Image (cartoon, rainbow, N blue to C red; front, side):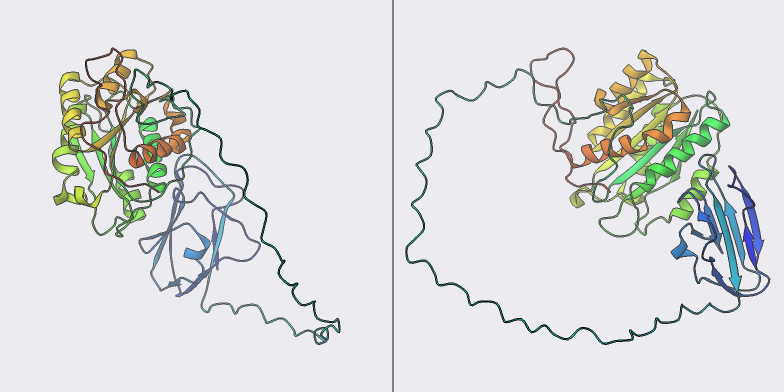
Length: 388
């Protein structure tokens, strides 16, 4: 028998559960639609998430097994028809042999023997190189070279590239304060899922590790870095289970939790000697309840080697932007996103920026007002590495 999401494309936030009545094998019929949004929409087959044909075709199921279908809130595609049979269908019959042998070899004469070498050496070399110019190189600029070159300049234009290599330790901080409604928080969940997809995580040395902190009046470590590799299925469940609790905006509590509990070797962060970049993405729609404490905690976190990128969502407040610049230590690491609906469009540029800072070796960034000596871009030299 077969199951389907129904006629036409599937909807948002769909949920259905099917119990297998007779054991067999899953398959997808040729010609039937199988068009779903990878990572966000898919099946859970006895607790294992599947969203690709190769993850479904030929999977064995037993009597009583459970297959669940779920979708997120955004993209809806054509859908699926999923079937099961007691035995696997045989592969296509082999093609018939050709009716005639291949052409006989040609009768053409072999190619000519190679020519003899020339009797004289090659021509003399070209004229001597020109003399160097007499002018000196350009004088150094008065401002230090920027550590990074961002095409987006923190504007959230969505024009970045999402292609990079290597692993990072990446933590996302989600604001769940009272000013964010349930629909907006669900869009934040979708952004986090999409961002994590750009950083394949697992147990290998060059895989990424991911963590999640959420905060309002208090902060919670919802997921810690896992040395054994966190599965996409478990991360999906964790993100879906984070409550939009309401409350204040204690950004300082979230940053302190990152430093003391999340970015620690005891909780899965890789030690500095491994050279894996440490990245944090702070998402918030408003100013912190305690700006001075937030800025102080951010400085401690950056001094420990963590690079902070911030998203200012649904707000154009210059005061909030100034606070986020103090938190990140770099205006180019603050992105303004006009509303929650635009978050999904920013994944590529945020990924590109994270990869840029992860692979860069910064010098110093010019300050708004010149100082006696340039202000460091970051308090510690960034570990070398890359992201994927």
